[in-house]
Length: 93
Image (cartoon, rainbow, N blue to C red):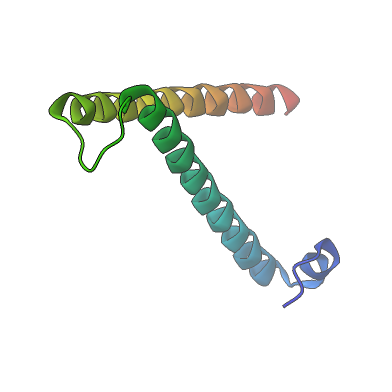
């Protein structure tokens, strides 16, 4: 299937909407994977100072707290961005 911009223009409206929904899903999956990768790298680097065959209880606790904070921060940023985008869209109308 050709996913170029010209191919999307040739779709009837319902197929174009399906195509856009598929693209949005793929972007959401890619964003989630990137978030998980960054979070894992940053939290591991912060919490695991002496890698070994298992994690200590303090490393486990640090990782859990770090990941919770990372997700909370990302959620806050996403909400702020969404609110700002809505404000800008309402100004344009």
